[in-house]
Image 1 (cartoon, each protein chain N blue to C red):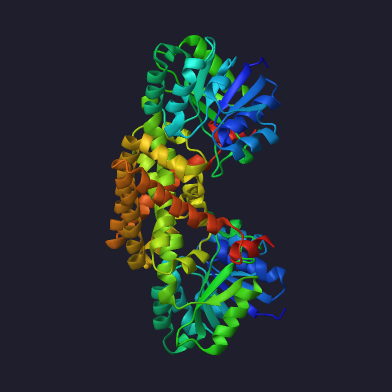
Image 2 (tube, each protein chain N blue to C red):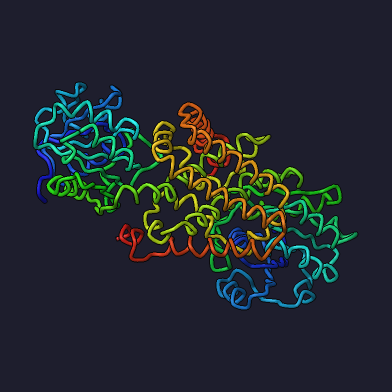
Length: 299
Length: 299
């Protein structure tokens, strides 16, 4: 495979940034990897694990001679990290991010880059676990997963081609989607399940006798709330950045809960079972191997 | 280990009834196992897999000479199955069930048994998957899991001792809990997560562009909705049987969702993050190996 970058800067060497670095190294498609980050401990872990070749703290030094930049910091910090790097970037450097919200992020980054906005292409690598930090990074996390690029009319063709090559170089299946379509979709299939998980845990914790009740938590509760172990900082940022679509998704979800509640309170056996049958049908189709990602992953 | 029954009748040879039979056989603590069930196909599977020794369709013949009965049918049918068996049961036979709702079930069964109520002890084996039927039964499903008995003042000591020996004989960790405590706890830690999973799937399915959105469903959605693949018939029964506690749990859950929604809409970063931190703390404690069931299961 062709080399995607001679000197790659990763700002924010956490689960995603670190896993990207490991995958690129394993595939031999990257030269030097420079790490920029605020936590000394995390950066030391990244260096010790061989995720990055050197640590930089100063944006000017970090940007020196790089031909590609990945900003894999929490959503709230993306635009400000790009702003701090912008004046120091070589002319040929292209920039991408890894945020799970795209509309407001892409707009803010394009504003920060001004005339250099053609060199940015937003990305959302769809992968992750409830863990975070360089210690959790693995070279297989991104492999075979989808990565959504959200180029705008300002993104140059060259930028888009090079950023596509970067994520594909880590083994991801890359596609494009307008940011305005991306955000409502992920509000529903990703952000809302996180809201539900956090709310489930809070509900049980606030009910009387919670510690004892939790000892009875079996598979349904454990699976349904797994993502509530995710980073509060990261998810606070995501929910706020995508707040229009997320609040709408919560309203629709409360509507669905209320519908089930009414059928139960009314002892409307037929309506209740019809709702559950409809849900089961959709869920089982999701589980079944098909032409989508699930099948490809099994190969 | 001591034999728990010479002739055991299992009414409803599904995931739980079948797994119980397989575990008792493996441990050599049971004599003959008679199966009673309405689905010919399922009963044939049970017979072919060696889960039961013979199939009976008539309650009178099924009850003949049995010394123990497990009623592992859907919650709604438990009392009526007990009613149909009651007149034919030998004097020494004791009866248990496997319903995940206890208050109304135990009351209905005790009414059905009249003076024979001393021979019944309700049980809730805390195990299961989203699959159902004899084909899904395994000899390890119940092993090491908890089984809650809900004896009442009418339950005789002998009955309680024998029913405890039955579930323990399948490798379960048996404990007792009043039905009035059992139902609100399980409304929160089991029934509510199922409501959330069904509602999550319905929300996405009813939003525009659902088929496409669902192709982006990653781990958070898949884990959070796994139990929405469960039997609609079984869960309709459970929600209705436990409707007081379940509607209360849904109200509390909608309250938690609304609180998160408000913090997001108000862009109240601090309040939002505090909620998520509190949830993460509880969830991580649940995941950590401790003196509870998670650790024991790992042994």
